[in-house]
Amino acid sequence: MRGTLGSYLVDGGVDVRQGGTVWLGTTRTRTAAGRVELSGYPMRPPDLDIGLRARVSGVGIEVTVGGTTDNLKTELR
Image 1: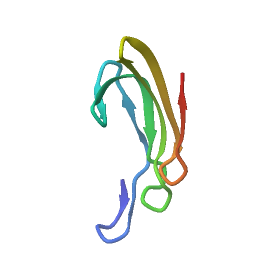
Image 2 (image 1 turned 90 degrees about the vertical axis):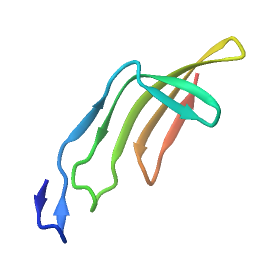
Image 3 (image 1 turned 180 degrees about the vertical axis):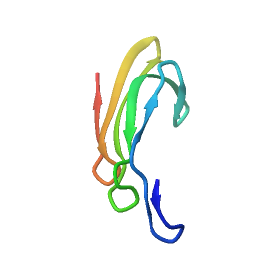
């Protein structure tokens, strides 16, 4: 983090650990891996690259969420 309280920038990122829990509606998913990149935040939106796994009605699914928070892309497998 750099700047002043009224005008700051965050540089760096956060790694998403495997096995964390994320609720999507009523479905509990587990994080597979990922990263949230905060280079230049809040001037630039965060960049996500997160993989999630869940079991719905006995079927295993994987969801990938990626891109900036103002232009997210999801992929379901």
